[in-house]
Every structure is written in C-alpha cells, then in structure tokens.
Length: 363
Image (cartoon, rainbow, N blue to C red; front, top):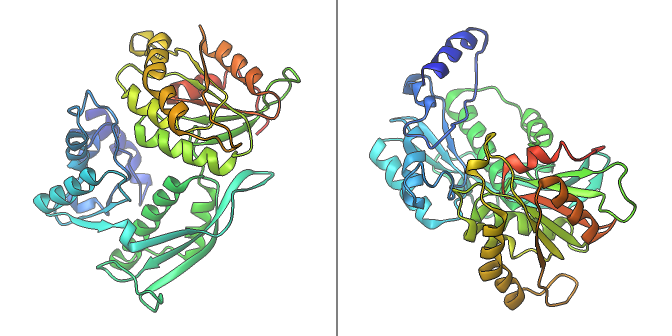
C-alpha cells in the first residue's frame, strides 16, 4: 500500500481525473488509500470465483472482499451479476456501509442490432444503448424524456458480457455527468466505447506463415473462472459457429478447474490440448496438464458427449491430448483443425501472454 501511495504522490499533481484498478479483492487493497472525499465513484463488474484461496474460498467471501471498495455516501456502480448470491451480498454490503448502490442493469439497456461483422480492424458488433436519466433507475417502456439513446455503437469487445461491461461504464459516466457535473459528450462516450480493446479478452489474431495445413486464426482469451469460460463458449458460438475449433488450455493451480472445464465443455470443439505454463514466472503455481486432462475426462468431456450437439449438427466428443510445452500445444491444435479452423488459447492470462512469443500475428 505504501508503494501505491508514493506513486499517487508522484503522479497526482499532473492529473485532474484518474481511474484506479483494484489489484486483489478490495477490502485490503492498496486502492483504499483514497479517502471518500476524492472518490467520484466505485465500479464493480461481474463477480466470479477469482483469487479463491486469498479471498476466503467462496463466492460470498469474494463478494464481501470486493465490496471493500465501497465508501459511505459515495456511489458504487454494480454491473450485471451472473450469480444471484453475489448481487444479494453486494446489496447488503452497500446498505451496511452507507454507499449509494446504482444498478447498471436497471440504468442502461443494451441491445445488439447486428450479427458479428468483420472489417480490417477485426470482428465487431453494433449495439444500441438506452441510458436512464432518472436517479432511481428503470425506464418507461416508450423511452420518453427520462432516457436517451446511444445507437449503433461499434464494439470490438465481443460477447454479451462485454455489453454488460459497456453498460456499467455508461452508467458510471452518466452518473458523473448528472450528479457531479462532469462534462462528457455523447460523442466522447461513443469514441471511448468504440476504441476500447484489451489483450487476451477474445483477442483475434491472424497468423503469418506456418504450414499450409495449420490454422491461421487464433483467439486469445484469459478465461480462468467458470463464468468467464461460459462467456467464451457463448462468444465463440456467435463469432465462429461454422469453423472447426481446437482449444489449448493451461491454468494456475488455485483455480476452480472443474468449473472452468465444465464451461469450456459447452464449446463445439474438435480437440483440446492441455499444457503447463509458468504463473508469474514460477512453475510452482501451474496446474499439471495431466491433472487437467483427468478432470476433463471425468467431467468436462462427459458433459460434452452427453448433452452437446455441435453447430454442424453432430454429437461431439473432443479429442483430448497433453503437450509438454505451450509451443507444442499450439502446433498440435493448429494442425488438428486445419487452415480454416480456429485455435483458442485459454485458462490463464499468463498462457495468452506467453503464446505471443510463439506466434507471428499480423493483426
């Protein structure tokens, strides 16, 4: 926390407005050096099983820890929560702390107005957002003067979960405009949403060179929680429903392996290759490939074989393999699906970052 405070002291004089990202949890995070008097708003996105060991081991304990960023009398914007237990816990924590809870799902409605399209910048989707002006949230069915629309926003962050994140961002900025006098134009809001891109969040790469029979399309997605794995499965279906898919999976040892693999089992895939990568520079925290393969065979692949019908109309059961290194896992996966297939590298942000050392992307 001392290092964070020193950094703020160095950079604050040159900055009027700034956002700070919480590193771990919230209750004991360094960002709590901010006093309520200078906190414009706190924002909580969807809460899932992150940092299980460090934050108490349950979704409720994780939620309570993250709620530590709430401050008395200050707004906390809460994005759509996929787990009801998290939503209930956040409401209770906001009430106990005297924070002003703003439900982004009530304040902002998001709708797709197109299929996923592609241009020189990669895949994208057009979305319409209707934003409430009323402090209590909710919208009249006919829209009316208590809401306004930001239509045809070109989002390069794909998937319904990213629409929820965009809605939370819009809700936050609308609150700051309406209650704190921030001067942010609709054009600036649009520009911000349309330019937003994050590495390893359904990041689509097209590869240079390589063997003619190897996949040229690679998706990097650092999904390492059950909800993130389910979101990845849904987004893949949206974007690449007609393409053969192979997964490369590496994970840290403190994650919910069964839950993540159950989410990945929803993907219509040809093959899944398990491997190991260093986590924060150390192999000590890496889940063993054999361990992941065992869990997959016992649970994930069984689920896929029993309940999933692929987009090509066939009952699917993915071929499961292990690879000694990330590089060899990528090579195996690329060959399994062929030139027009898609390889998805997932399970860890560390795996996504390291994979770039073995790929030659041109986008």
